[in-house]
Length: 335
Ligand code: NAD
Ligand code: UD1
Image (cartoon, rainbow, N blue to C red; front, side):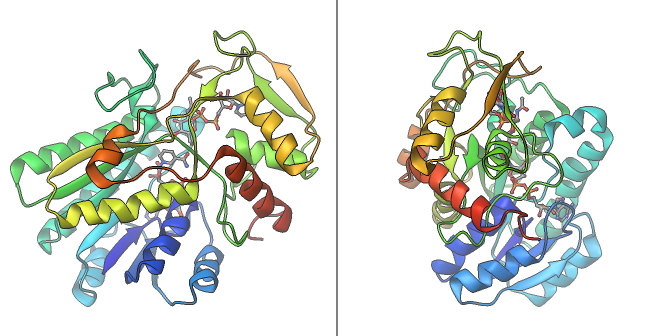
């Protein structure tokens, strides 16, 4: 049985589907600070299976103990965190509290119950400004924002834990840019308020909720002047967690792996594929660079292939089709 923290969120809900489809039993804990229980209802609809849900905070040791006493949890997949880069700059303490302190509480409770298998959601944000591309796991570390730092400190805490006790099996997954949605159109990304990330903003423009997409910067040293990223289908990403669980079952010790496609895509390339795939005309305007944006960031995903036989299967067109399917089927997200 697996405890999924943050399971009602964007990546968590997609991972639940893949886990349940592999006949894993799951328990979810989520405080719903950035999600809704409806996502879990949709997961049940897609899989035809039930799941156990606790609405609560991973910083609540009493609740965690109740869960560990009641369910035979073998491994934890730890998604629960605050993830807004901008917000982390204005509220760093809230980010250190939620992403670090609460993670320490979770780990303490796990250790107390002798549960020593964990998959941790890290981010390409730990690399900071790219020094070379594609970026492998040995790329220099240098997170720029409080959010990126919390993800990196989380990695460091887990690494120290692995040194202190060799029974821990820890897979830290550094995600590149997850986009898209489940093919059913029943679950997807549902940001609160005005989206900051490219895809949700773009699909909200396409559906007419926002007037125009701003493209931040056209003077980068890239194929067409716009920044380059490694967009990965959220379902491929979710499947990476199933593979990571298999890796943990082999008593893998500590591993850190990139999850990306290894394929670079510029903002303009993405916009043009979106228009081609969906037949939607997308109004956009060129704007100055956004502060803190890297020029070019994409993964070397070879280690994940070697260590856990995982690679992406879905194309950029699949990502854009599925993102559009979700947005057009649910113009107001889960509401
Ligand atoms: P999300 O906000 O959709 O999901 C996170 C979930 O955790 C939400 O449902 C939220 O309510 C819950 N949560 C937050 N703090 C909690 C707490 N203290 N106790 C219980 N529940 C809590 O985010 P996501 O995009 O699904 O991201 C999942 C993980 O992946 C995060 O750790 C994030 O840092 C990491 N990550 C995300 C991206 C991305 O682009 N989405 C990229 C790299 C890494
Ligand atoms: C950002 C975070 C990263 C985090 C990720 C997922 C920064 C510097 N990085 O990555 O740490 O893991 O989100 O939450 O914030 N763009 C536009 N117009 C828009 C929005 C974005 O042109 O309205 C461009 C950006 O300049 C960027 C690309 O689209 O080049 C992707 O942006 P975004 O989706 O925000 O992700 P990242 O910035 O790569």
